Length: 194
Image 1 (cartoon, rainbow, N blue to C red):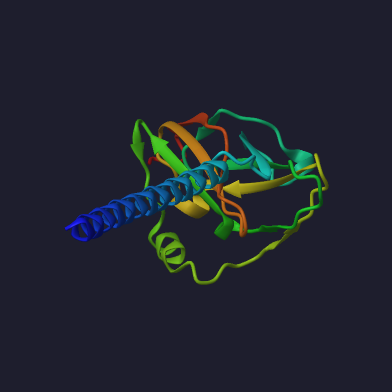
Image 2 (tube, rainbow, N blue to C red):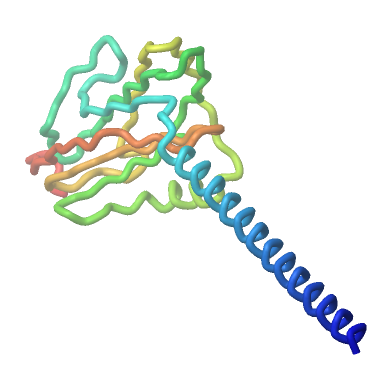
């Protein structure tokens, strides 16, 4: 009988040790999963809060090139509304930035309503398999370059009203960079009855 009790005692002790071992493995697995999730969340947060490689500042202009640019907040209907895009390199090294309308996504709001792109521009952006490069900008660290965009290329002639616009700049290896928001007015013109 004593032998039977020792056997039962040993068997129960083995079961208890086995249960503790399984419980330990479960806790260890839970800890590994928790640490992995925490690491991924921290990495994802650092990606979204990373410093932008560029600063984009926009303003409305009336000139065509860098030398003849002058600011304006009112445009007569029918006149091309141009946006000066000043791109500043915030990286510690030279960066190559392609030029062209395919790399900009302006968002234009008129009297509180978002304006849609022209049909051919919408199709061009939807395909997005190719982009036409009109040149390159090579700003050194801390240096700015200027590009002028015509909103008429994206939207056609603008009707009279109060407008607000922001511009997103598409970068290949970085997240899109958003500009500041600016406002301007398009006024009725006796020459253009829009």
